[in-house]
Image (cartoon, rainbow, N blue to C red; front, side, top):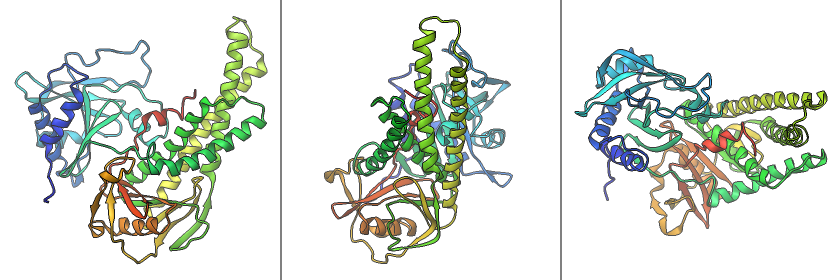
Length: 443
């Protein structure tokens, strides 16, 4: 059966389906199709020999900020109007996109009553969203407009509603469903054992120090661990070099030629320290509230107040340490070969070559995050590139391992063996905004 090809109109229909329950602004399929066609063709252009990358925000110039929050933070987005609106077409977009850093700003676009698209201004302070995605810092705020659309590469249009990725067109492939493999299914089951080890280490330490560690912290700790793994994958994706992450106990390096063997455990320690300090700080805050603020006492003991300030400072330092560790681990993927991580996210090596030569007879694409047998689709092993095939061979031979492969065109895939079948998940969900927020807020 011939593969189905998708076009900007298909993306428009998908986005319209997602937007209809949430808006009444009268956006039509024709307007969306025209917008995504312009973006799609602009992505194939260059300006001054550089590829064109940009973000557009579809936002009404007559009412750009209909529901502002009661408190406007200093780094909240704002809009800057052009003196004269500019028609939105490919050539204009390519030129004006040079003024846009897609990680920090966007062009404000809309359509008139006749359905003609135009650029009416710019949006600043978009950098908070990219911090949320790459998770260097920040805790997120509302995003402007009906939706946001971004070009991250040639023929790659991604559409967001706020912080939610609602669909993308990657060349001729329409992506509408993102498999939540990190939160459900066999990949989640394996990762849960690793996460429980992390939770138990934190519990043991804070209990010894005499601080309360209730069950409601367990879900928060789980999200912390998952958020870090997602950030590593997203950072590797951002390099656009391609790479592979292999998670296993690595009691031996069988079937691996680990060119650069190291033992980088700082991320493990930083995660432990961050969790401990957050729990202790939360207990201090609760104690201050119950024993002083709730009773309307005028004064808080100076030592207690200093402890609170100290732990707040140390938490900020821990966040920066985690961000630095993630950048370090991610950067190792820029060397050809696989990055080796143990279940505690300790790097055991990088630039690793998988030495298994035997090809697989069968590879199956999962139809859902659970890897439901009835939804598995058999595909030709040789359909995939060298990086994918070598990871598949290893995961098939080592059934307790999980492999992640990030291609140069930014696709992130997960794979593992299930019942002597190599199962691969495409379009996996790694943009856990709530998980990232939990690095800055605790229960």
